[in-house]
Amino acid sequence: MPSISDSPPVHTGTLFVVATPLGNLEDMTFRAVRILKQASLIAAEDTRHSRKLLSHYGIATPVISCHEHNEMRTAEKLIPHLKLKKDIALITDAGTPCISDPGYRLVTAVLAQGVPVVPIPGCCAVVAGLSVAGLPTDRFLFAGFLPKKITHQEQAIQALADQSATLVFYESPRRIQTLLERLLAILGDREACLAREITKLHETFIRGPLSHVIACLGTNTPLKGECTLYVAGAKSPEPPSSRVLETLIQNRLAESHLSTADLAKEISHQYAVSKKQAYDTILRLKSSHSNPNQEGPP
Image 1 (tube, rainbow, N blue to C red):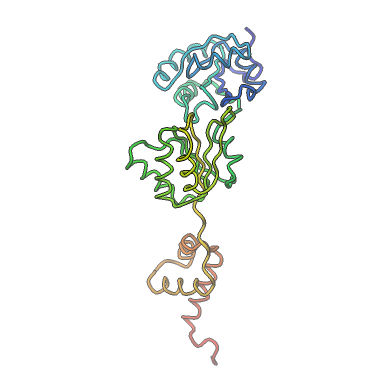
Image 2 (cartoon, helix red, strand yellow):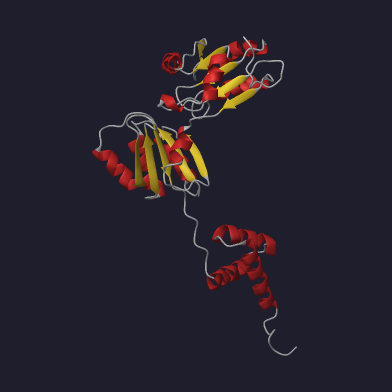
């Protein structure tokens, strides 16, 4: 079989990390189909699940199982295959491998052997939902699945409380109500968007404050399918007025022995003002303290 044109000119095969549709089979890319057809072997999270996709596109490439419980054993089998200059494609049940899905341990094991790993981009639930969530997209933090144990989950949420980026969580339909209630209790009633069954027949988006999302779930039939939850980040504090800033700095000057630069940096971080404004205000106050009669005669 001829080598795939996307493969780098090396002395081994290539591991292709191939994104597959979240649900709608039409979301498959032309390049992904070609790679899956030309690869010597496909490593799939669930071979039975992947058969539907492969059959739809007439892909007859042999398939091997690669899931979270056998990933390292599978890697040991695949590395010799790659060293024989045979290309392998990695897929999961839906979306991009390694993103809260199997694949990370295989990728790191292959990279450690000097074998190239090439992404074949496509669907990813995190990005697909974020694009329509109606929340800020300039910065987001993917938290994935939080710990199931109550205390550990609460600690994880608390650690994210001050993040200004939009927060993204994965959760099962059985536990989504509990997660929403804990987020509300710890973060307050922030704006949110709950996405489920993205690209599928029963695709649903519930947008609004966390309390509204919880209320909507309480009136609906039990959810099915993995949920992706987007929650607005923490709001930046309002910067203090010039007079308030002066008072704050005067108090700090009386009790702090930090240098002007270090104090300006600390004030800037704590009160959401620019370092320059804090620095200039400190210098002016220090100057007035050292020259209390500066307006009088010399």
